[in-house]
Length: 281
Image 1 (cartoon, one colour):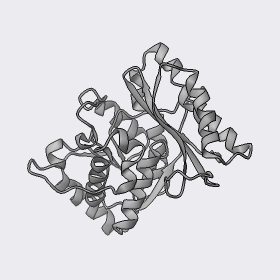
Image 2 (tube, one colour):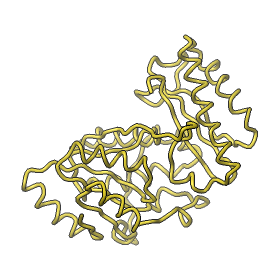
Image 3 (cartoon, one colour):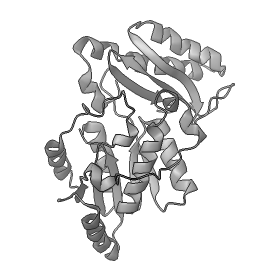
Image 4 (cartoon, helix red, strand yellow):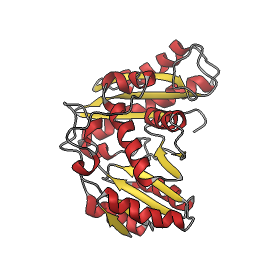
């Protein structure tokens, strides 16, 4: 496994790979890898001839009051896990390698980025799409794998790739969960023991919405009402949003779309968690 830290060397290494006609699969990450990340890596390895994983804690997707400084950084352990999976190349750039000091150009994520996560984190998706666009240009992958747990991010990355005619296939990796339903996340390690037990409220609310939909209900108010009942069971949960959106365009509709995705976000203590669930999952 090759570890590269600068863009010039990355481009040179991948130029040779492409000259050999090999299909490049890519997984962008912020490190602190866990089983869910590795599941995305497995997809990339299975569907490509040459696998690339990036590790970069992207400062531009964090707001001023968020956890950029304390976000877990475990590059040595991450590389050990990736090597065990047979990854070919790991790209670990510095901030200065990714961003010039006088940089002013960014990706406008559009109006859909102002909804849900965008209301709570107004600069988040601009930062996400800008760094993903940079990484796509640097790696030039044939395919890239993103997790469904960050459903709005996945939707916006797909829209960016389509709208900007980027020649990359975006593949969704399914959300992995603990036995009690909590979605795997790097931020779960911040949860105290009591908070960890309460954190299943997100999954319970999502399943309440899904079950109401599967019973034949299509009223958005009624489905949200079932989700609210589950949320009210855990008063410690400070909810940001919860609703059902169309999986096709990430918009609320009433009646609810025939292909909905239940979404939820909020805080338990100081830890902000997000999750989503489709009836077909």
